[in-house]
Length: 287
Image (cartoon, rainbow, N blue to C red; front, side, top):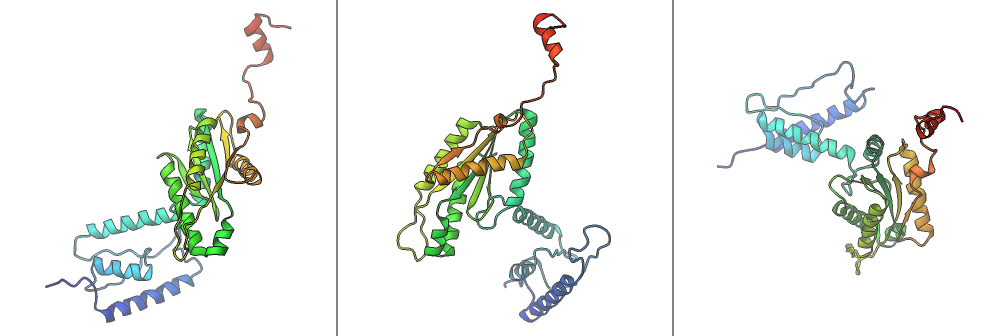
């Protein structure tokens, strides 16, 4: 005999109605985030006959991922495992673009700042690449936004497949993507980006309702720091963005590299004074 895994339909609908009412009430509270600091409440509701499978069914139907459940007498481990899985999913959603599953702009900004600090401390190169789909508006206007989404998903998958395990791929705008390449210099970065641009050019993207597969191209702007000076994320981003603009202006479907960031900034400060240098090289203390 099949074991029941959920409440009967009527009690389920009653519970859902209660939850919907409670969600509306909480939304009207001045601090609905349940007080990150200070006082807060744990709200309990006994649901006799509801097990983990039944609760998961309800959460999927009503997007109740921020509600937690624990059994009164059964083994709590499956419930705790489910809570842990939910937390991992929420963390992923907070940092990733839902369409392409690449990092989102907020995560990208945080990672770029951290990698620039690491590059400066280690004296290692760091490459930032900005990609932009060429004539993407035409895709949306001609074939519709679902087809445009398919193109974005395909480019996102391409970046994930081409990057190294310790590189970072992000979607930073509508049709704009980025790669952060730690410990990569100019020559190596140009090779990697050239391969991606060529691979994008070779794609055949099938869309529902579109007779012929679509062909797309991307333009790329590259900025490099050699880790020899502190580099603000905004400066490196601006250099890559300017290079991307040049790639667009030069005909699209190509890579343009900005001048190496460390060579465009002020010279490094020396810790040795002029008189000390004179002594080191000549043995004299005066000119």
